[in-house]
Amino acid sequence: MVRVKMMAAALTGLLAVSALAGCGGDKDSGSGSSGDGKLVLGFSQVGAESGWRTANTKSIQDAAAAAGYELKFSDAQGKQEKQIEAIRSFITQKVDVIAFSPVVTSGWDAVLKEAKDADIPVILTDRAVDSQDKSLYKTFLGSDFVKEGKEAGDWLVKQYEGKTDPVNVVELQGTVGAAPAIDRQKGFADAIAANPNIKIVKSQSGNFTRAEGKTVMEGILQSTPKIDVLYAHNDDMGLGAIEAIEAAGKKPGVDIKIITVDAVKDGMTALSEGKINYIVECSPLLGPQLMDLAKKVKAGEAVDPRILTVETTFTQEQAKAALPDRKY
Ligand code: AHR
Image (cartoon, rainbow, N blue to C red; front, side, top):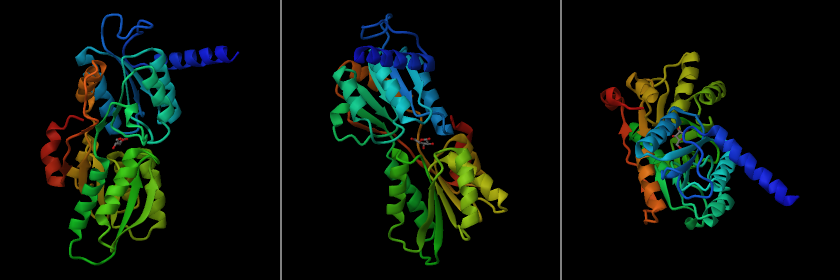
């Protein structure tokens, strides 16, 4: 009975990922690579919550096609249980390599152990997990989110250098428990710590989406009489908040200074128009590096356990210059 239930669960998982697959067909059962010798990569994506995520998905799909891999792509719609289900299905299908961008940091040990026991190498992209056993994955490719938060805070401190008047900051956090939300909060808090006049007066999650950024900011505008600065953990929440600020009769970028992270086209446009004051870049273009790493780990080659993305920051003037060539 138990055996029948386990088989049924495995089959359900397999069907779920096949239904969600963006590219690639079925793989020969029991073989290491696809029937035509292509490397088979199972990728579990967080969802489609932001412009950054859309660009990241495109980068991965384009790079897989260019490398000639078979990509089994699964969208978790922001749910950890869907990611675990997808990873289990990739294991059942015996893909060559599993990669994923974890929705939240904790709760991955069991499924990562299953992948390790099945001898399938795992690559973390974009976001980290908090597993103590580093042998559960081969490498983590992505940004330094603490540094991003610190850069946002450093810029703010510079704007108020030599001033002692209170500066009230509202923080729109990303998804609760997600690495970029935890780290961007920490980096920013560390950067402003030595300036007691700069205070975070409200800090709430907008779940990395434009819609929630707007509704959360609407509430905060009503309950908080003096807001000098908005720090949003991504462009999308910042853009949603801008709509709320304008609807409240205030000028974004002037009445309330705005700092965001990502530097996607919409964010850069708002920055060049003066509605955002500063953006810390977080690059979503991880596809080519991921494909290279997948080839290496499949071949059993050693790879660096941590691969950092190269990023920059943008002022309003720099955004104007960079916009025409912005790819995403
Ligand atoms: O993990 C990267 C973050 O996730 C991006 O900054 C944000 O826009 C996305 O949703």
